[in-house]
Image (cartoon, rainbow, N blue to C red; front, side, top):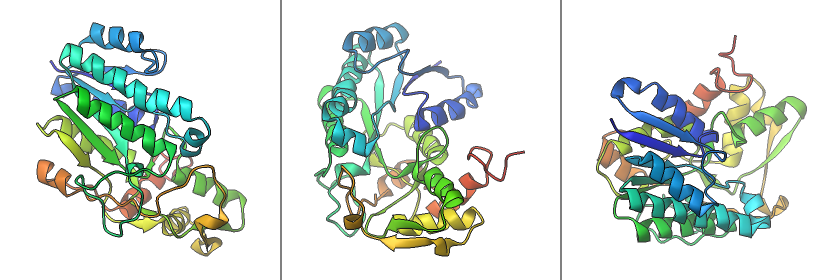
Length: 293
């Protein structure tokens, strides 16, 4: 019976993985959800003993400091969690012979391309968050032979702060919203990503794989769809630019991911982002979703 350990099990992606894998008990897997109290990735000794005691076959490393502006303000914490913490997880996996699936980000790229980024494109992060996640990637590939780095983008879903819930909440309390038109990416639903991770975990794929929902949009276009699916007038969303919004961390202007390799490995692709956003907003998973009784 394969043992699967999940770090960051109470975060947005980690909790989605736990929900998904708990439904897979008929697949005869043994699940070990670990959050900060169980496995603090900034404690190398604790990581080594925690993973050493469980001896998992697969570790899905979803624990991360994902607050992009927070990382810019507190670089030490960002590197401690996202880089050095990942190093500790990778070293522990090497000791027990576990396969590591590391969740990374589109923010390892600088956004200068105008076509989707493939796994072969060179990273060049423009903010501390991207730098810390890239350092984590380098530790994983330098320490392990059996690993998979899964880069994803613009994640949304239940269990954590995200753009979809923020926009819908603001739409309830404001008459107009200003959202940038010059940041383009691929929104990715956490529930869809978990299915993709399951397919990848069940494969023999290694190296780097990009996974996101199909299609791309600006944050402005995304916000208009969120408002529309929330049964409000999308005209309330007004276009702005990144120069008009002062934030600690710079964002790449274009970070769309090419998911062709994922399709080659699994024979599958994730549904279009528009469909995923609509599904989330109409489900009981979304705060105030129409599917709630």
